[in-house]
Image (cartoon, rainbow, N blue to C red; front, side):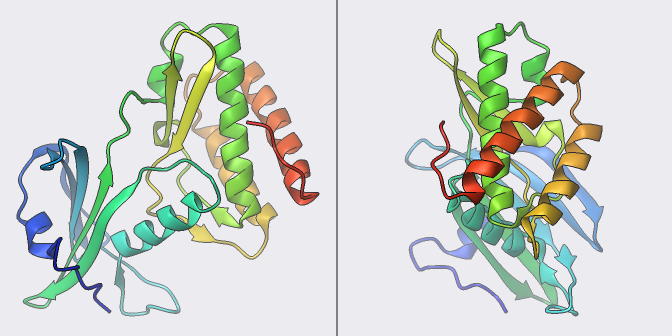
Length: 229
């Protein structure tokens, strides 16, 4: 069923908003989807994913449900597991003239680069080690909560190098295909197999280190122990 927009943020405001296209509308899933970048009154940079009849079907929703509703719910659930993801500013859907219109608005990740781009820049060994540790921790927390990203490519892993030291921030994007699995290992196998095939310029040695950090974090989480940042 449609998600009602709160009076302070009417659905039509976002639907009619204009900005720079960063992903031109493309036809898929029987509808179309595109992303624009714009700025609100507070000066925040926002990304607006706008979709028409872009649906996913399941046993629970055999007639189809707007995919942005699924993605917004996944973003909030994964964020509750302390996995860094974009902040959801607004989401909603409505039917208009027999078509589903749906919107997901997220805050920009200032200063972040996708993993492909980050690796193509010179990185000190300490920063590479810190990045692998933080990425492993994020994935371990997500999988421990039985969430599967579903489209874990290097282009959907974002990295920010903070300051002159080895401080690293990680964020996971594009959870449109994310879903809850019955067991953590099911989520883990799918995502790690996918990332291994689509990790871009990450060298084999870094991939091996990532797996070591990941298994250490998984063991700590299973035992209920705190995992170091």
